[in-house]
Length: 308
Length: 170
Image (tube, rainbow over all chains, first blue to last red; front, side, top):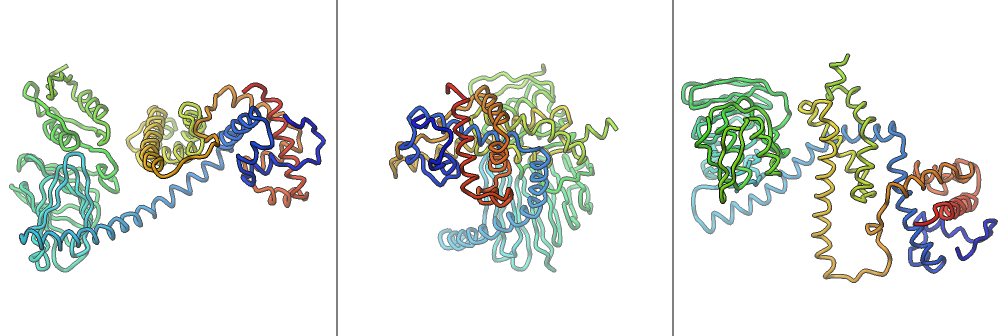
């Protein structure tokens, strides 16, 4: 160092620099180049020291606080999304009406995409990948009906007028509540998160309560299961199925990723239970294939599935 | 009792997982990815995700889950920063100071640093830890120890000099 004197009345510039009261450029003027690089590295090492040597009790307490605030933040975050979407969808509403003069409003998502938007009554919809919601805005004021193809999570505003979600596989009626609807191919699943939901399908109808999941395959095989998650996994980036025939799982994979799947050589009805991530195609495929004991052969753009 | 420890959704089990792996995940982020600034936040977020998914993750899968989530979080941040930098480079010219990102921190260097800090003279070490670990400002340390701010600064300054001397070759 320039000044190796340890008993010092010299200006404690290193302390000031560490505290951010002295800039790097100023420090460079006071020490050699070698020392400057050394101090920069020491500073980084000291930051690491703090991260690594802080007593775990303290950082665990911080974590607990974060978990508490996260619970309340979630609600605020969704309301923010909702407010932004109302503005966006109002613009969209006006725009579409003006340009297309059509009677139908449509929201569509592409493969792997999710969209959040609000309806005129304040109900909020989160649309999963490769899905579509359509409705007639003028008629909506009198009868709250939307058409769904694919999957969406609904947060319906309480109102005297019932809210209906119509799909190819059945209808869901509610007054004001939160629920998830999945409808593709002949697979129909409704998960009630709060309130009461009436599901009407080909061979009958049923009212389900919070934490109940109603699955209807092919219009007739009905299953009611319990599920205590607070919101659909797909909103958090995962697609999940319980004892569901493989063919529906493949469709779900195709909704999230651009895949061509040839499942002609396998039994499409083997049951799958599990979940795959929506942001990692390789991991998702591996999970599904491993669970079903299948292997995949890539031919050009197609994935051909075979028994292992 | 054993069964309860396997279920991470139980607070005691979750706490145990934290105490087992938190430091490891932080080390992983700091030494493998060279990321100190966000190591703490990413680690906390990973444990939050673990908690939110506790029903689906058995105890013996917790460690790999944490590593995966932490890695992904870091990669996402890097991607985002890359995009930001692309835009910023067009707007401004950076000065000649060395940016922290370019300093690689080796585990071995860190171990030496730790040893040096642990063997600092008591007075310097006390002030040093209060500033570095408890994040107290010099003014607050002065009040706590009933000494002047100048005295605190002097001790920090000397501590840094000692560290520089003892750390030897970078």
